[in-house]
Image 1: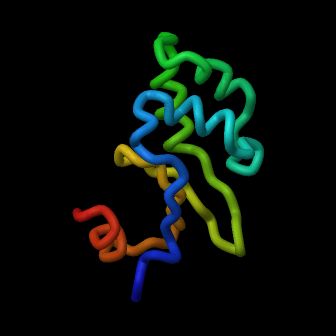
Image 2 (image 1 turned 180 degrees about the vertical axis):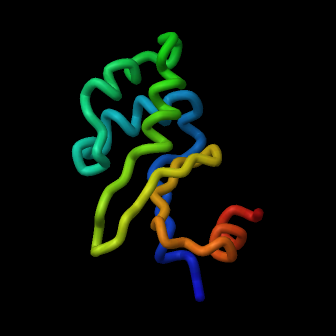
Length: 96
């Protein structure tokens, strides 16, 4: 089974430290279950809570789309990953 339909690139790693900021400003945060309280520190990558808040978002954000649960995953690039990806599909997608 192919994994491509379970993985979508949201933001390229070419954005560097600005991926959290760009996610917060370019995506529907309510759809991902993220509140304003969670993102108020993501305007400035040099804010003391920037990375802590981003780590929390990466570990808790979820959305439902086309009847499937999706989560965020960052390996440089920021991905939307279906929650039902198998270990084999993860290995194919991310080289584990």
